[in-house]
Image (cartoon, rainbow, N blue to C red; front, side, top):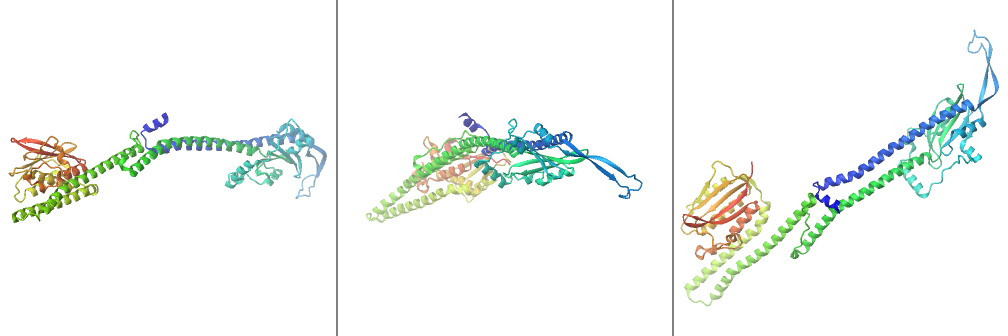
Length: 544
């Protein structure tokens, strides 16, 4: 699929990709919840404001059009009351108004929708005069068919019980009172709002307002939402949130599948390939190549491929090394066996002395081979853990050459620096680099017959340091001169004392240089009509 191929090319780390993709779904969910919660609160407040306005209209209408007075009352002012001297005794006439139930019912029919609102009217003695629910059911008015709330089904009950246990439906969290008895305080002239619960744990919003006639309170009106009106709004809001959640969950699952395809599948393939390599090294399993990816999976793939290639190369080296060791040990052992078998047969003392010398030489060669083989086998591990430091190669080379020239050696070493005063810094292990040059000097001297000099030169460019070791001791035979870096390889004639060299010195030198990310090479040269060999070492230059 194209989306998966595109994701492989995106130059962004997996950690950032996971964060971004998961945040997309999370932000969608959070945005939906915040938006719908604000909308829910706005609806509830709007419902309360609408009930306030409607209750005032109905209250004023009842006060104006649904009141009557059956008698006239007389009130006698007595000047002796409250030290009322100076007032004339007189009689004030006033009317006693009451709410007319027949007129009230006609008003309620016209002003409320019974499916949404319940109206209750109480007189000044806090006695209920009218209840719209009972009235509409009794009259069976089809135009405003009252729909009573249905019983909740099984799943709805589980849903509501869960919300109640979590405290989401707790009415105490609202800013309004839950005390239904507070509504009767409207007889004192106050407007009151109460949010209570019915027997089905459904929220009911009630507003009580006084009914006044010429500033006298003759009763009060209570407008309430029907049993399921508020819960229906809330449940609709939560259903909307659930829809948003389902969409977000679907997107999250889809993105997770993308991540699973781009991360899990390649990692599984790499893990399976690594197990195959571990279980059967002889089959040389190929690690899947994801090197075209620009993320951690690509890095992992490249690292595993490099590690596997290094492992196979190391196995090949070990196998070749074992074969070479067996071959090199077999030669002196064969010679030693022949000498031992011939010793009882030979009677002449001179010949026996010669056989003893051959036996001693073979034993010495075996001893040198074992020492060099042991050193070589430990070299790989040593090179990876030994400490390296930044040093001036010219300085350590000068010290080593002075030590080599000390004591009247036959082959003097001369050092030539092409740029005076220049520092040749490199990050190396000093002892190992010294071992490389010692091996090169010993190798050159092993071909010398008349004490010629050995020339060493050092130079550098902005990125590398070059050191050459040259001699004029006959050069290297053959066309494939790089073979001299192979283990146990030698082209020395017998007169040079070939049996004193194991053939591992140049191989060890190459191994040390390559572990320092360097290169070593060799070529033949002609100096003063004499053929010789020049070894060149290239090491990374450390920029101070």
